[in-house]
Length: 99
Image (spheres, rainbow, N blue to C red):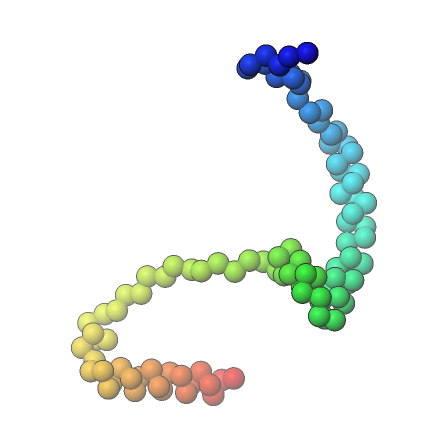
């Protein structure tokens, strides 16, 4: 049998799985999820890099950069380099004293 150009060999496409089947599968998986996570965590603690990667990718929310606009007013613009440096140093020391 020769293929005709532009005619699908499977006009109906792949049969869909029923929603009931998918819901049952998700239910069965979710029953065992705490055990799976526990096994992955143990493997990751033991040095299994792939287990650690899976845990981080799937269980830890992704961190995204935040674009923040910083408004520098005239008071800050008028500071000398030394005054600005001192201000930053004071801030860093205050942060260190908190921790």
